[in-house]
Amino acid sequence: MVVLGIADHVNSGAAIVIDGIVAAAVNEERLVRKKMVFGVPRRSIAMVMELAKIRPEDIDVVAVATVNGHLINEYIEFRGWFDLKRSTIKQVFFAVGSRVSRFRKRMPLLEKLYYKLREPAFAHRRRALKKIFADEFGIRAPTHFIDHHYAHACSAYFSSGFDDALVVTMDGGGDGVSSQIYGASAGRLEKLHQVSSFNSLGNYYAYVTHICGFKAGKHEGKITGLAAYGEPRYQGLLNDLITFEAGTIVNKGQLFYESALEGIEQRLPTGWKREDLAASIQQHAEDLVHKYVGHWRENTGKRHIALAGGLFANVRINQVVHELDGVESVFIHPGMTDEGLPTGAALALNAQLAPDRSRVPRRCFEHVYLGPSFEDEGMVAALERAGVRYERHANIEEKIAELLAQGYVVARFAGAMEYGPRALGNRSILYTPSDPSVNDWLNKNLRRTEFMPFAPSVLAEELHRCFHGVAGAEDTSRFMTITFKCTPWMQRECRGVVHIDGTARPQTVSERDNPAYYKIIERFRAKTGLPCIVNTSFNIHEEPIVCTPEDAVRAFQIGHLDCLAIGPFVAVNEEAVQRHQERRARAAVAN
Image (cartoon, rainbow, N blue to C red; front, side, top):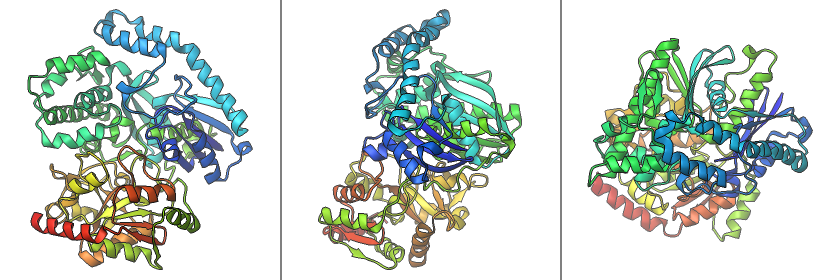
């Protein structure tokens, strides 16, 4: 069975699933160069069909993630929840709902009224999408609309490799829900519990993100990193607003949207520090997830946990779940945010229509290099159009390892683009892990304002040497989705990838997953004795990860990087030698 999966709201995209295996998955932001873009994913649909070698008539069914939504026919770049243009009805609801949220218990019909008023818009989207598929792509297969959180749940379960598992989804909200709990076994998922969007922990994390001066729904990762620099002084205040009671998450403060911003700010003391507020929401979120997931783990007795949804982009929260009593193993879907919805919707429909659900694969991919790749000729053309000088190398992996060992920053563009928010070696910026100052100067060059340290790509066989407590999370660490406590050796020798709290979020690299990238790290180890390298996404701040050779060359030039390894070619920035000498001098002082 061939299923085309679609998501057309935030971080829209498409995926092709064939008999339960993901053949291709791409998000629209990479193709239109607008980060977390909303809109009908026309380019992604065309791209995944091309990658999977699927014609319109080959598609058996179409799965569209999220049942209730309005049509977005033009691209909208996501700039944060409080800067988003909404339809008139939706804007009125948010404004009114914000003001009357504390009276919600006395007005139980408010949410029903909202969905009743917007049903014509929802129905228009469903009709319009079917027409677009038929008229623009020649796709006339039956179209199904899949519940937002069920799509998340299926993305987690059918990629985990688990047969029997507890499946947990958590985010800001989708289809009126912010979390669902499923018991999964033999290819079937049974819903055990759900939490409404009003009672969303993810929303409160977003509120704090906005209050701290960042973009809600977009920059929560900055809060996670910033938290290590503060103290959770305001956790009690937050617990009075959003808390855990009787197996669920409860919006005790009865605050929503703008009233939540006002309510939190009014409760903060004069002179509050954003580092402390970040630490407070991070610690509180960790504690609530510990209680919530722990409750359902004990209630079901299940020992394997599969996670998806935007809240599980928080790698520290994932570590908390991994460390829960009774958890044997944990897996986080690599596209855990809404960019994973196309894959999840397709997997959900594939399972739903399967004649024997027990035979549906529980491992829908072995790696996530599911996007486009490019021929050498296209790379040469991009370099020459930009006037960038380059050399071809017969052993490009050895050359990259040599440059890294010498202390150069190398942007690598090779093979198929990764699916999900993490660059996993094929669209990555690489550097030695021993320089503790790298987070400051490299982020400045890339125009980023990050508080998280750069992540390490680590040889799989060296994982236990570098980290504590990895048992049961080795598989998910392949996708840079969880943090571990670093060993004393790691903290001493690889200071450039260890956070102030002593943790790191590694990508474990095996020869099976990515032979060429593995060879780079293995050769780097042979030269330096270090089994890991810095890996950060190859992009400029507020731009998506590079997709094409043209994107790579442009980012190389704008980012003032030392070297670009693009396919078998290496380009060197003319200023690289001088910068390299300056960095070596700084590193010598720091060490």
